[in-house]
Length: 112
Length: 274
Image (cartoon, rainbow over all chains, first blue to last red):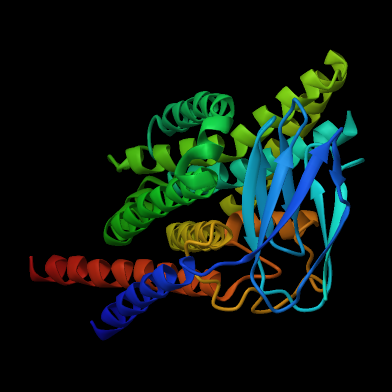
């Protein structure tokens, strides 16, 4: 039976850690979606820190903010805004795109 | 049309693979087609409802409604799969015997199909709502109707064809190993879903990442490739998982495996005593 208790213990520990982490304040960066493009298309953020990304959609249609490199995806409703937490990132380039308009909606997060 | 087809295909593929595993796991159950069909229909209705409420969901829970909703849907599916897999571990032996005696996949008694119907409905709901939102955007963006219709047709048939290919592949497994195999597939499916749920909770900053990128195997197998996406849907492959995703994956898999062994053994022992 001990493995069950161990894994449950790990779960409880993880949840406890979560409560502590959620309280922290994180640097905030804004990106706007306009005419199915990201503005700015290049965002420089500090490496090694958790980042709060706010994506505002000024278009009349929904978009999906997605990035394989950041391992994130989130729908941004029409005329709405969303928040996505990423990192702490290693220095480098992290492309992201709008899944619903992949030909135009492209951008990159640069961690320095 | 191709861009539409590709997005539709990606989403349909994920749902189709889940449906395929469920379809295989319910082999031999009379009327399973109706149950699974019902699950798909409920999922499509749910997808449209979710897409229509996208704004509401996004604004809920201080802007973290989407993550909570997705995590909840995934965890619900995990619980349903776990229940079924453990049930099968206790009854699978008898089932296999009956199927061997009867020589084919015919009536082998009742099985709890409700759990798997819910799994199918939730998978279709999750992937379908993205397709519906995307199609709304296409219509509003002035795409021609034949482009949209053609894209849907191509994408849906491509996704379903991949699911069917997997199904016929699974049918080649000898019957004495069949339910063991589908049970392991269900276990990995559930573990993968738990890992995805954890990722949503990290994205919402409700769970610590325990290392935002534990490893990176995207050079070996990209998440964008067909194989990468197939394995993502089936066994939760993630080229760049966060530490907590791996923890959720392992814990979920271990709990289900323990459940299957524990109840599987009890059942066998009580059988011997009779």
